[in-house]
Structure formats: C-alpha cells, structure tokens
Length: 484
Image 1: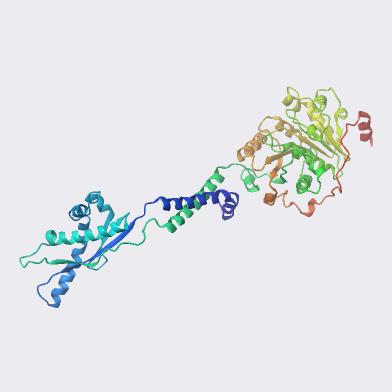
Image 2 (image 1 turned 60 degrees about the vertical axis):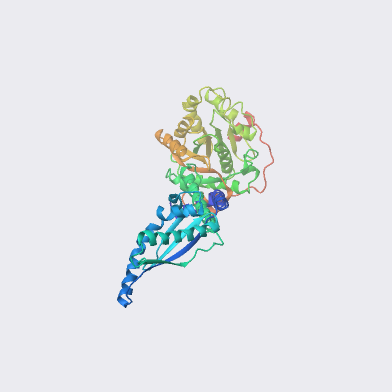
C-alpha cells in the first residue's frame, strides 16, 4: 500500500486507534500500580594479592594475578557455599539456590573490583543481603579458596571498599517507561487492527476500490441523504442541493455515452437490493426530462416494484398488462409533472417475470418507446438476485451498475459484472450511491475528465420546485399530446 492509503486508514479508523492506545496506556499504568516494588543495593570488594617482597615487579605481578582471579571469584559469589550461610544468618524464607536469583556479581573490565548486588521487595533487606553476601564471600575466600599459609596469612585479601546502603527509591516498576511502552504498544496494536480491518473489509468505499474490480468508468457519485425515505425525488423537491447536483452530473455524463444502434435505452441495475437503484433511476430520468428531453421511465422490476409508490401514482395497471396484451402502452403510460416525463409502472406482479421481460413483446415495447422518446430508462431488478437484468440489458443500449458505498462488496460487484458479461450484456459504467458528503471528492464524477462542479454540468435548473401533483392522464389526452 502507498503512504496515502496508510494515511486514509488512520483517518477512517482514528477512533479505534485512539481507544486502543488509551487502553495500552492504561495497561502500562495498571502494571505500574500492581507490580511489587523492588529495591536494589550494592556492596563493592577489592581483591589484592599479598607479596612477600616489595619490589616493583612483584607488585605488578600481584596486581595482574588479582585481576585474573576476579572473574573466577565472580562465579563463586552465587554458589551455595556463599549463599547458604547468608540464608541462615538472615533467616530468609528461601534456600540458597532461590536466593541466587536475587543476587548478582560483576567485575568492571580490567579491574580487581567485585560488585555484589542484591534485589529485594524491602529496601532494608536488600542492603542487609548485599552486605551479608559480601562478608560470606570474604570468609569463603579466606578459609576455603585461598586458605591461610604457614606464615598465617591468606595470599589473597578482599577488602570492602563500599558497604551497601539502604536505597531510597525502588528500581522497579519504572512508571515512565511502563507508560511509554504501553502507549507505543497500544498505538501499534490499534493501528495494526485498523490495517487488518481494512484488508479484511471487502466493501467498496472509493473509486480505487472500484478500479481494483473493473476497468469500467465511474460515471457518477450520488451524495447520501439520511432522509431519502421521505424525499425520493430530490431533483424535483430540492433542485439546488448537492445531492440533486450529483444526479445532474450523472445526467451529463450519460449524455456523452456512445450508445450505438439501440438508441438511448438504458437499464439501471445493482448487484443486490437496497443499493438505491430505483431512487437513482427516478432522479436520473427526471433530471434528463429537465433538459427538455422526452423521457420514459419503465418500472422493469416486476418482482419488487417501487417507483409507483415513490411517485404516488396508480400502479395497478402497467407494464405487465401491456406485455400480455391486456392494455395498450398509451393506456398505462402516465405523465408526471410539467416536463415531458412519463412513467410506465410495473402493474400487477406476474408469476413469470423473467419470461415476460425476455419476451418479444418486451423487445418491441422498448423499440417503440425508443422511437417516441429521447431517453428510455428501465429500472431493472438486481443482477445477483435474478437474471432479469441481463435479459433487459441485451434489449437496451446497455446497463448502468449501481453500487452502494460502504455496503456493496467487491465480490458482489465482480460477480454482477461477470454475470452480465457472460450474458453478453453491455455495461457502460458504475455509479456509486450513498457517498458521504465529506468524502464525495474521492469520486471522480465523470466519464473521462468530466467532474462534479465543472462547467459541463451547468444545465438550466428550475428556479423553484413544482407544486403540481402528478395525475393520471386519460387515453384521449395522451393521444392528443403524442399527436402534437
């Protein structure tokens, strides 16, 4: 991943990172509070070798010998022969072997000094142990390691140069270090969880996610509206809102598509339900009608129709009646509003929607509508749920694939596109819906270089919302309008 992607992960998951970091900091503070304090005290011994002569050479030889035997003495300090008497003297509740884990000995390089260090939960006891070990070691050297000679003196002498003192502060726990470690570990764990969460999250959030799945262009990004259930046709009710402008940007990009020989008949589908497919179809069709074009919106989702409910128009008769020959298209085609915007509702839900949508009558209907209207928008069913979208897509110039930001997964988009490609259906591009307003800039609302806010999208906008409610036109009115 690039540095920008890591920054995006931190920006999206900063709350998680902060919470885990605070937990790490709390863990460091808790460890400091719960840990048993440990105190350290040290005594220092000097090792010297007695010399019978007083010449310089003998003194140098004795000094060199004392430095050589120091390392051997250091190893002896932690043995039972030294520590067992200390345990007995101080009446410690442990053995000499156990005491060895609390005692250490070391010698500075090129010196005849031995530093004996003792650690204990009690400051006083740490000093007592260090001094006792030093005295016991001196006795062992004098009586066992380097016993007295015939002259009555041991050739090696150990002198205490520094007695162990009672420490005033513990060496452990180190609160500042524990807090720093907790902070760094919490930050690393939190950011690691954020990265893992991002890698495992297969939902689509940006154009980069779409580009990982397909090379189809992103035709638009529709800004999310939390009150969409109350305001489906926002291009009509709030024409100056950013969300309405994003539909007009999609409209402009659609006008630049090369549709081929099947006219401007577009199917709108999505991988799954509840991805704002029907709302996009409705607003896109109405936005096209605002340019003065004659637009027909066909409710092609015969399994779960919703457009007639959104527009509050009569939906009992519609597409299914036309396909079975029960009604003429002009009998059920309804004009909505003041523009040349017509809606063909689904009608009653049939038992065989796939057969009806794939029939020759459906193909003839779309061909007829394409001759009478500048644009025909077909609200098709979701692609992964049923095969209806692929059937309708082959009759149209192509399909627009709707995906919901933060909901549609990469697998769903890939599967839907693959299913349509297998059926030989043309997909013009992808439209992202439910885009958070603060992230809308991450989507290139364009086909090629066209983008949101550019001059190519500056189409005439109504100065005020229409107030006329939709009504069902009679057959005579429709025929009169078509004749004109």
